[in-house]
Length: 183
Figure 1 (cartoon, rainbow, N blue to C red):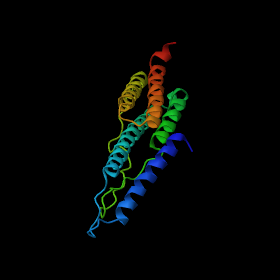
Figure 2 (cartoon, rainbow, N blue to C red; figure 1 turned 90 degrees about the vertical axis):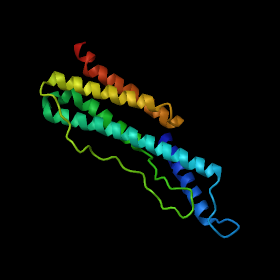
Figure 3 (tube, helix red, strand yellow; figure 1 turned 30 degrees about the horizontal axis):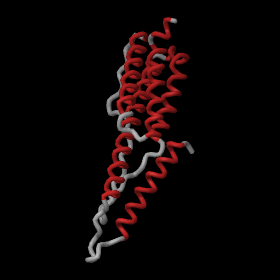
Figure 4 (spheres, rainbow, N blue to C red; figure 1 turned 180 degrees about the horizontal axis):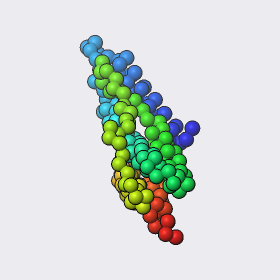
């Protein structure tokens, strides 16, 4: 289990523990107990991390769809794109690892599972010219890389390290798809 996976497991356990504690306790007057400031903060942090993970994995899946569409439109590019696509698939899996279900800390509230990213409803359009398709793919890599870099500001430390690594890889992929071909 990766450090990121262990951290996510701990966050999930803490959130579940806070929910169980909130649901099992009551105030002195017999009514439901109000969550403490620490429980509310833990819930806020868990929700923010879940939203960040959802955005990150959605961007990575969109990039993976673009690779698949480009490979389908231009099979001759397979030797060049397959290793990059494999790396993007691994990034997608790593970014989604440890996604948690966030449950409210308030007693009596129903649990709300985190949403799972879904495939885009519209198919990815790919240029008919292979060079133009590579440029589009490089632009998509840069966009995803920029998004992961921007997310570093709000990411917890372990996830920030993963995002930084994925962003750097995306920048390298963009280079390989454009400038690297000229070398």
